[in-house]
Amino acid sequence: MEVLVPSEQSITGQSVPDASMKEISFYHASEGKSLATPWQVAMTRADYVAQFDIPSGMVLDCACGSGIQLAAYASRLKRSALGVELDRDRAVASCLNLNTIANRFSTFGQGWHRRSLVLAADGTASDEIASLAGLEHNSVSLLMLDPARPRNSRTHGLDEMQPNLSSVFEAWKPYLASTSKGPCIVLDLSPRLTQELRDGVESIVESFWPGIGKTWTWMSRGGGRVDRLELWLGGVATPNVGKRFVRLSRTFGGEDTIIEQHEAIQQIRSELQPARRNEWVTILDAALVESGLVDIWLGEQLSNIADIRWAESSPRRPRIHHNGPLKDDAHPFVVASGRVVDILDLPLDEVNIDTIVAAALENDISALTIRCGLDAALQPRLQGSIDRQLRNRQGRRKAFLTRHTSSNRLLLCVQYPQNSDT
Ligand SMILES: C[S@@+](CC[C@H](N)C(=O)[O-])C[C@H]1O[C@@H](n2cnc3c(N)ncnc32)[C@H](O)[C@@H]1O
Image 1 (cartoon, rainbow, N blue to C red):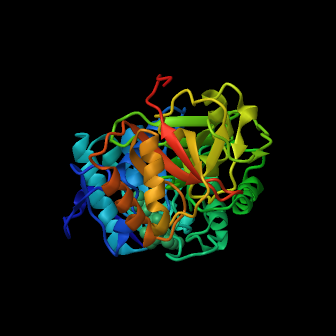
Image 2 (tube, rainbow, N blue to C red):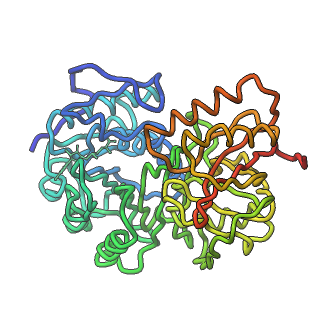
């Protein structure tokens, strides 16, 4: 075990620009770059934590990797950082990154940075770490854990996490400062944890802190993917909010879109009816649907949520059919939304592409995007053929093509410009 003082570390290796903010560069070692938290994500979380009343003490990350998330919390909360990392080179990189952030906020050698430490050690060796770092019981203000996971895990099993939740909780429980809502803990978990595994995480947490507040947070940077899944506990859980979904803005510092579930809402899902002209079809952000918060959002978007019919489509392209337009069809959660103007009873293949283009032209369409599951090699060929044939024609409307799941018919859906009733 070795104690590293950030301000005493000399630079080794080359820093590389952060994925979300090119002006800032971080150090990584032992292939730590792919594990590191992008600065935008790290600061979004830090801003969120800063809304709570966090007790005094150090911010502890007991598997700190390149220390990026740790640096974001420590600098934002103005609390000293205590990083622990098994890989010594990564521990050094964490020191350098704490220095970078301290310089960025003009606090190098002062305030939170002056007392920050990184230990090259096992993150569960709490008593030894505490004695070296001069840490007393009840003096960790925020515990965060972003455990290592096997690269190609299929199961995302809880026992694969390194270090694992139970041993971290066991080791650090006496050191955590408490608020009236319990200790402040943020777990950064695999975005692919199933409901069953999430229940497993909750029961481990409950065995240490029965009845503690829990807010699950899904984060997505778009493209229908869940990029992050976190569990916020105790002093940093939002009272009565079990789930949140955060769609990060495309640009750093832009506005994020957030949706929260305040109480359990049970929405009964109606199944698809036969394909109909004039009904509306919307393809939704898959990450929003996966988070289980989509019904709340749809309740804000449609005057009659009972109208919605869910298509049994691939989880990548969740689709609903409904009777009226969305209030905001340009919302970040909408992949595409339009009204069915034609139903084509043909397979989507090269033989039929001219018929499909003819239908598009009849419907005044200038651009048609294929939005249904297709063979990866065929998709660009068909899309290219549609684009070539529609180019320089007179159509004025944008549209997409999707497949009605139960009948296998193709639906030609026109996307109306907002506030237009054409
Ligand atoms: C996903 S990375 C953390 C990335 C970090 N949040 C960041 O922003 O850079 C997980 C780290 O846990 C470290 N680790 C695994 N087991 C550990 C243990 N028992 N004690 C301390 N660190 C451990 C790995 O070496 C790895 O660097």
